[in-house]
Image 1 (spheres, rainbow, N blue to C red):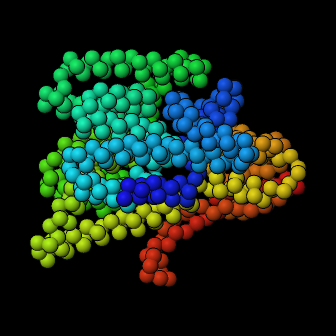
Image 2: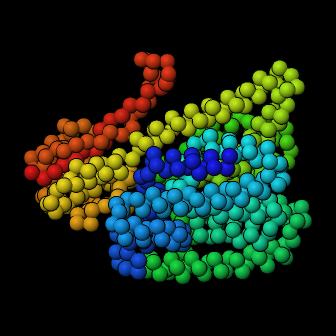
Image 3: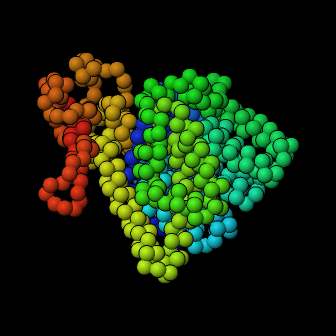
Length: 479
């Protein structure tokens, strides 16, 4: 049964291999570490640093683990994009390995059957499996969070504190609110003294801060602590709200129902039926509540609570299933438990189909390489902003003879546009002004469809919802 998580994670990776702008720093950094090595002048972050700096430590670890396979790809002269699959697969494996450790700890406390329900529920849900291999800062922190939770459950305090400190100091400072609650619990119940806590926390913090400042100051070429700057920008200055705001309870009525599926309804029931799971579920809910005070909200910010809340859902499923033979009513409830898993799978399949249509930039550049694979003319490709945000990475720039440019602030009416032989340009229809203007100098080659909207499917009962697409990119070739 443990193989399920590997299979489902592989399906998600293969179906959605491209990445978005939130993942771009870690992905580009892994590319540069693997393909440019010590030639830091060639690194992407010098030209496109992003709003806030991120640490190189995560990319160094993942690219280091992936480097033997990538070295073979280089030796065999394989398509560079295969390396993107590799680094994402390695990242996913680090999450899965620590997830299995966490499950092992759950098994020792709650029993094998509840741990099996926990695994089944987790693989039927969408967002944890989807994010598992995506190079987000949150995913980089996830193995450390799971390792910390394993340490906490097994009462390995050094492992818990060191892993927590690494997740907080290196990747996501807000995790302190979640793991700090578990630390306070141990101190309150005298499982850990304040003196021993400080003896572990202080040297851990000093070592980790020294590590990130030394490594990241080298790569960014200025003294800095990346996650400190991120925390200051997002929390102290509250500038993250410039990327949109959501209502206070958005995590509870939107993010958690989508990420947990119908298992969301079983979380409070599990807390009632098995009081032991409250020690995991209550800190998770408290963390989401505290994090709700920040106006800018994204589901990935709270992804760490999914493995915690799923324990409560698993407790409810386990109790209902074990009592299925006691009455007709309990048998019906047991069927409902199985039905909720089926609904989770159907929802996950639907969301995966939607996600596959959200990376038009990646599809566009792949299509361009296929269309021009036999061309002997030197290519100079302009990648516009939306293309760079929806799938075009350095791994996707697979032809070493081509020149790829993400030059910003260039108008399609600018004569400078004529230097490019090919353009990946955002457009919703062929007769938009910018497209028509370029047709004077370039030839329209092809287009890429992307997700547009949902509507009720009037043509058939199933599926009840129809996914509509619209043109998102057009290819232009110089005449």
